Amino acid sequence: MSENKKPLNFLEHIIEEDLANGMPKSNLRFRFPPEPNGYLHIGHTKAIGISFGLGETYKAPVNLRFDDTNPAKEEQEYVDAIKKDISWLGYTWANECYSSDYFQQLYDWAVLLIKDGKAYVDSQTSEEMRVQKGTPTSVGTESPYRNRSVEENLELFLGMKEGKFKEGEHTLRAKIDMESPNMLMRDPLMYRILYKSHHRTGNEWCIYPMYDWTHGESDYIEQISHSLCSLEFKPHRELYNWFRDNVFEYSKNTLPLPPKQREFSRLNLSYTVMSKRKLLTLVEKEIVAGWDDPRMPTISGLRRRGYTPNSIRKFIETVGVSKRENVIDVALLEFKIREDLNKTANRVMAVLDPVKVVITNYPEGKEEFLQAENNQEDETAGFREVPFSREIYIEREDFREEANKKFFRLKLGKEVRLKNAYFITANSCTKDENGHITEIQCTYDPLTKSGSGTEESMRKVKGTLHWVSAKHALKAEVRAYDRLFLDPAPDAHKDKDFMEFLNPNSLEIINAFVEPSLKSANIGDRFQFQRLGYFSVDDDTTENKLVFNKTVGLRDNWSK
Image (tube, rainbow, N blue to C red; front, side, top):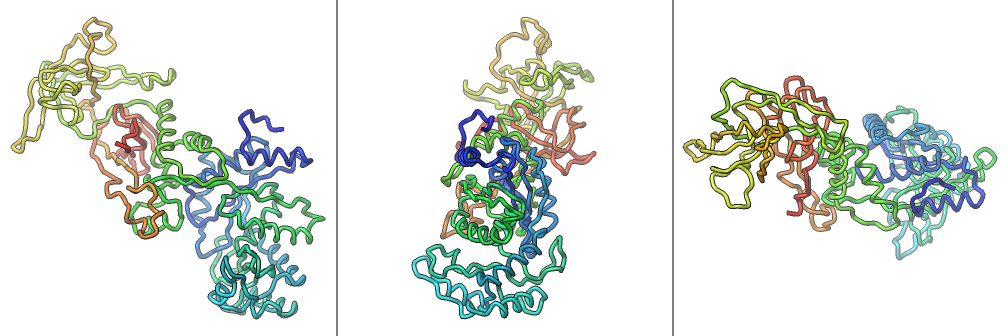
């Protein structure tokens, strides 16, 4: 039995039942089979988490198999990105496999099906086949080529392989049942002619196997015990089993274990799209800056935005495994990264919309370095020094000339605490000809230094502001990201294109000031900008330019 003490999900129940019925635990083997036709997105993390999670639970190997049977859409770039994403999430695969590794074996098995009268070469057009297959409420009709002789089928199939025909001129179909209520069983395609160079096999092949033929047989070759996939493949299970059982007859002496397909609900997330085709549209139309744009739901986009592997794994764990399709609120994902970064991200100070404050009674030319705690949630995080001087920047929204009693930030005649520093009182302000405040004049109480232990420093004050020293501040570009779509289900409207729901304000570029400790920050480092949110150092950062991405705010403000 599994050592997992949590309640078993339905997939674990299936596995436990198989083990109880005599399956050796050593026979357990799983796989994650992405097609390298795009970047992995948050929806894939559920399938990744399920397969690799079961591997961890049962100490069983998990293969990473690339379903690379369509060279028209697949690229080595996507293979590399997928491997990087899975490794970044913290998973390790047992074997790196490719469906293209099995092209010869699949071809040989197809030949055996032809010899047994279970497959034939069809010469209809795709439109003719579509009509001939019937509808869900009406049976199909047999292809006029369905009863070709074995010899003619073998000759034509060999000719397809040798490149003697044009694309679309012939296909290979399984001969099953044109009256089956399952449309997928009505003589499904097995091979098509495609003159495209493959990223691994080059021009060695010009016929490529279809998904349903490739998928199950690849599972069989790799001796996968449980082939786990999302619910949209449930109707495919009957065909999966048909191919599996027929091939089993050809190879049961060498490959004893027929795999078992089982389905789970896929992950749907609000305020985003999961279709690779639609995500590619966003990239090609330059709505986003690429597959790793921090607004994209891709794993690479989430990584660049500042999400952590742990937050994503905790998100998948919370979502759980189910048989019913549902939509998960993106707020849950945001909660998980907020929860994770609260424990791990060092606190720093940054001002995104600065206005200068001059502390008129602070000596000119004086500067001091104040102690600031890096992360009160982490006892090992330690302290850093923050410079303080006569002129500082605060957030423009933190000051008002006049305000009601509920405004606890800086206003004329009132006192606030500067984080890690002193109490200041606003006395006056300077404006330009348009009434825009350009400077605030304040005085400070030198007896209120934070951490000094004086009675004055212990005095209660309702407002605490973050700030940066104007003399020491570093300039930084901050990219404030919001949700890419305004509608919770942008691709669920039959009468509208998903692009109509794009958020025009999904990115704001801000010129900010940050404390000088961030000079040594590395790409990918994550911080809490105090009172503002969580931010990470972007890939575009150079020695002379700091760029930060906003990962998430300190609290969920979207509903407001």
